[in-house]
Length: 224
Image (cartoon, rainbow, N blue to C red; front, side):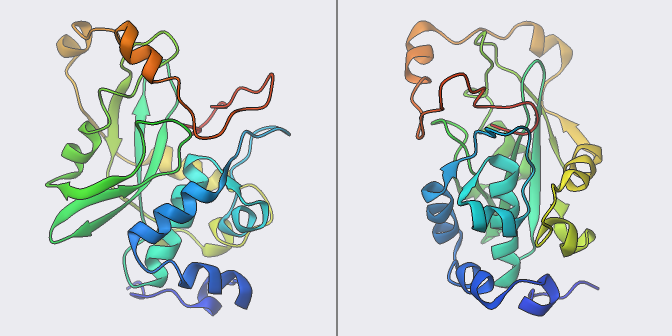
């Protein structure tokens, strides 16, 4: 049986690291903290930072931010759950999910407008995943979201892998990819989807942090 709350000793954090996360005692505070982190544009190549590395670097992309968010939830007695959103001809997005009064919400680190925080008003994870559908699109403006995962519980993985590792946490990303996923659309529905219209395309260009020149700001894996 997994412990309800994660302790500093269990996670392996320093007192200073743990103090930062302990202050994030609501999903809203966690989300504000992620908003204040700079976007990780991976200037030196692909990254999958641990929570410790995010705290040190003060930057993150989606799976890195979601892992930190789930860790903070666990410290405050909530299950540390990740949800993987998979797309075709596009990149995945990862969020941390939580429940309030039986309804699901999501904490998200992203650089664009649409794939951000979700209030806990969704009756199922499928309903939550579908809230991202219309705005989930690629550079050719096709709507690309196709599946969502069952909740991935970080308590399944040694915190030394994802919380305090000084190395990249690709094993976590691989395990998340391998989690069972559920289809959001039928093949027939996928064939009839419209592309984003010109007005939506213009609105979608707004970013919180401007990428450095020549940077592929979404990267290659889980970088929405």
